[in-house]
Image (tube, rainbow, N blue to C red; front, top):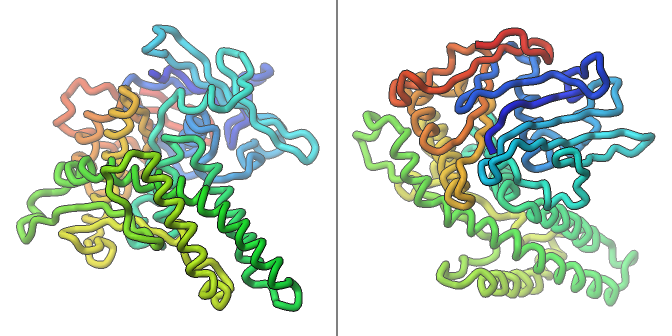
Length: 404
């Protein structure tokens, strides 16, 4: 899909126009569109609207009401794009409607209501990169799991439902483990734990498998991207070979040569056995001590966890390399260059790495929509050529006030 324009009506701080259904219209450039303005102008809201069209979810909140402009009960996000495969212009629309205590989301394709989210999901393939991503190396394992899950979700819609189901089962199992003997008979406790163990092993194996497959697919492109964007002058003291590794708390992972279904079944059996084996320990701890909810993503430099010693610049370059690898994998997977949504990341990089980043991105993305507080912060670099397509849009309080 080649983005043409985005319409936002009563979405976040973007007002609807005087005519019903008309909103603020943003015209995108064919390659790089730079949205700039002060904090609170609405730049990230534009990226959120595009991500909503891509995945039917926000990357900022699970609360649909939060995306409604204050005092409004209805919001509309619409993208007009050119479908390269069909050779036609198409309209993708998501509406958010609040009625009483209920807030619902609906999707439309060329004005036709989509009964199934699967029909709509992923028509615009987007990869998101936020400033928060730059802190995952030194963040918590839960933050790295969420980082991984967001990438998997952009590839496979069913993943977020499995994560939510797993979390619900996990909470239920933990409530049983915390129950006092006087409040729950031993036979009932065993029955409930057996039921929850079965559910956790089924859903947990799918989560585990998708995460492992993602890391395996990104490992090679990640190492190549890190070598490309990292300033080679800083590598003189060592090779600094980068690596990715999925760290399972359940068991060392199965051989990658297995087919997907065999590997999935092996992980299901392994997780089911681990839950039974750890049950006595879980009862003593009053919580579930094994499962993919405790797994981690390890990013390494020369075989050592990068979060322990990498410089700030190296840590940022490693996360940037992960996102570039994600872009490359998405392009290979679909045969199309994805849309990149880049939220104010340039402010976190020095000029040299910023230029290297955009030079690396130019070969991977179809279009890139990025935000910054000032347009001059974005230096696309000589490596992209003097004629690189770039459109600058200034936002102020949910409105486009200047374009160049």
